[in-house]
Length: 106
Image 1 (cartoon, helix red, strand yellow):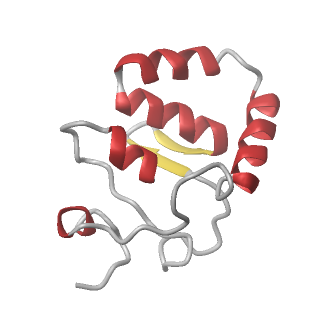
Image 2 (cartoon, rainbow, N blue to C red; image 1 turned 30 degrees about the horizontal axis):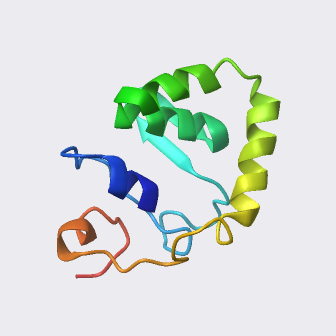
């Protein structure tokens, strides 16, 4: 989520749900939902890369060539160590970002 917020440029049409909120409750991975359906784990990362465009989209298309079991294993490895890989564990959204979070109370 933080990565998408930092790299999306002028696009602001993605909404987010906390894993602790009502919408994300029971989910243990990244989920991407768009007009094409729902993607999870590494497939969701590939869809997010397409959304970002440019070099990220190229990287996403290349990643799609890797068999899903390998991609998902790498996804789980990174997810289990994400807090140690850098960046804050929790970010307080700005007022502009706050409207894009599905479960935040106004």
